[in-house]
Image (cartoon, rainbow, N blue to C red; front, side, top):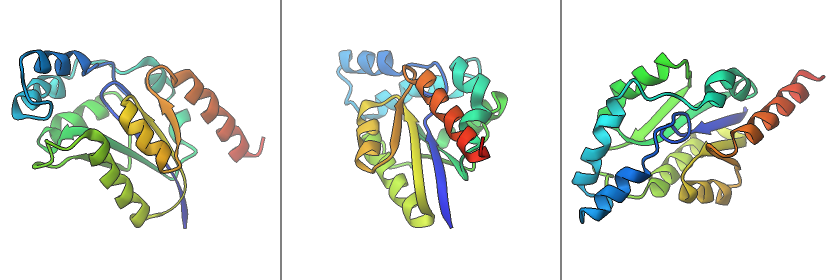
Length: 175
């Protein structure tokens, strides 16, 4: 059976947390870009339930997801932060079919390469007819484009993504 799959990211995409200052801080302190010191900086935000979602995905989540057979969240957050991540997603009403997180031992791999592994897994798991992805990481977005996905860059293209999903939902309803 063919599937329509929507892939979403969390930090900087569904929520307003911008990790760029933490990465800059780590680099200015001489930390290895993917070293343990960098990951320790991300632990507090991963547990912070007060981080708010971007308004468009929060207010229009059903419109984004209803034309898909599966909604998959792929995040570079560490699996050890699964419990607070799931709690945050539930708090804000972001329902999904699968949540893929960075496995322990992959901290030194780029987000693009981590997400490449999950996309390959999804392609093997389901017969995919259509992928749409929304993410804020330029490297990840280029990966998704290489894979032939329709891509929207968060947060700057949330309006464009909403317009697209409204059009698709209308077409799928036959209106």
